[in-house]
Image (cartoon, rainbow, N blue to C red; front, side, top):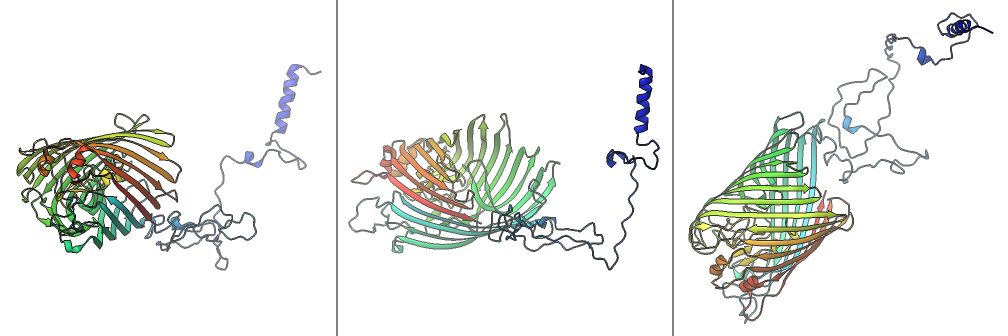
Length: 617
């Protein structure tokens, strides 16, 4: 038996003899450790690859086609292959995918494939016409959008028989006649958007866009003097109109930070909505726009100057006639203000609407308003705005406040120059519960309390299109309700401003104002179907202006109850096809009845319904 010291020496001798570096004889076995563990500390330099001989073909891999509709490549080859180990591919956007044949039975590439192949008519998958592949070089893209937007609408609105003592039916002695109307309009547009950029996160370096639009519209009514002052024109009107609605160029002036903050300039006819819900200004018109972001896109800003074009009366598209109206807009947005998910906006609007006289395409006088003294006048108004949109914890909130200050050189209702001081406020609260959203909202537009003084305190907008309290599904907001040559409320508006027309007329700050209280609920029935329901209670803020305007001593503030329901259907789970259907009714209140009652009967509830089909490529 070995002693402990001798045992240690024997163990050490065995380790040395087993080491891979110990000299071995010719019959010694090779080391059992993997070769990778025996590699030298420093690898020798690889020998240069021999140049291929001219007679030896270069090794090349098959060129598989890309998945989408790519169009022709805009990259000319600059390198030729001179090494069998490398194949130069310069157009990296059009890299191909290998043919998939999992079962190895010679099936077509489209059968049993994990890939989706695109076509020129396919807007969902990769398509050079939709900006997925560059059309020129590596950074210039084209986005082509074709849109068909059709609306069919049947409605009942208070309709005067005619101020010219001529009626559609003999022996008709009521001032308000049959309210039924049918309206159809159809826009077809093709938008070309050519832009240069690097990725979806970085703003474009430059952009050129133009959108021609063709419109056809038709209106059928049951009373004379509605489609034209000339009663010989009858009760039916069909019109067509073509316009270059959008046309602008855009360029990036500077990069403001490494986080893709930028400063850009856009010049030409362009769409713009100045607040979250379109309460004050929402239009497509000629403008110069300076815009950008700060602090990693946490803050956004806009500075715009609009020089308004006249609108075509029946299609509401732009003409090439200069209206002379100047609008300046500046706003600033800051995200995550106080609460994460809440965005704050501060804004200033300036509206300069000079003296002018204008008849619309249907021969109605719209500037100045055909009321009072019919005198041309000039408006200079500044709007100070504060708004917010987002959520505070689980509650969604949208709010807007405007303060209008300025001067009207001569108001036709007040019959004198007036100083403008009017206010507007709106707030919406909503709560999401599973597939339902419960909403409530309130709106206030100040009214004028004394038509005979030099202070105009009724609020009016520039060119609004609000998405609030039911939006396009609401009767009060969707329909233009006429009253003695002007509109009590404009189409796609909320404020009862007694203005001839929203697009062609001038703002009027001597009006009755509005209180609106709304409750509503939206249901996402399926990913394709959405149900929208709203009920609005409406009151005039003050009726003194209406009393003098219609020569009645007593007009109540209560307008009525506006109830609407609508559905939105997206069959492709995208915005490529959208179908909307809505039905609404206005149950007249005391004030509305006093304005529109017939001689022998009360005004009945007014009903309207519409169907919209929006198809986009």
